[in-house]
Length: 148
Image (cartoon, rainbow, N blue to C red; front, side, top):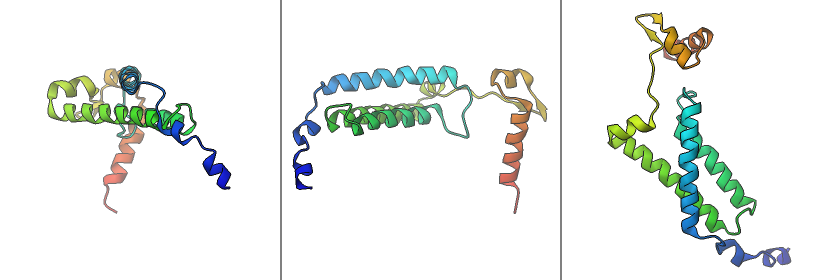
């Protein structure tokens, strides 16, 4: 048991083999590339989870997974990538909250699906929402707000 502890390459775990700045740049490029792709593909939000939330979860899982699986030579490299992802996520959320112009860029515009009690088919088609999905969402909303 003691041999297993000492046979670990402790120096290799904490000594980065890649440039830390390169990792920050790579993390930044991947964050914005995936953000853009998700923004184009995901028009509607799933249950209140935003595009940036999904992106951060997926990227953190990937980055942390690589760090755990020794894809990187050091824990520091995985930590720098995780930090980069969290930094951009927080920074964009903060900027969107503080500046309306930034919010318009990073938040998908919402479309009305119902107005004055009537379904707006054009908007439903744009959001790829069927009548059945809309009715299910309305039933769920009513059941959550109804007194018990």
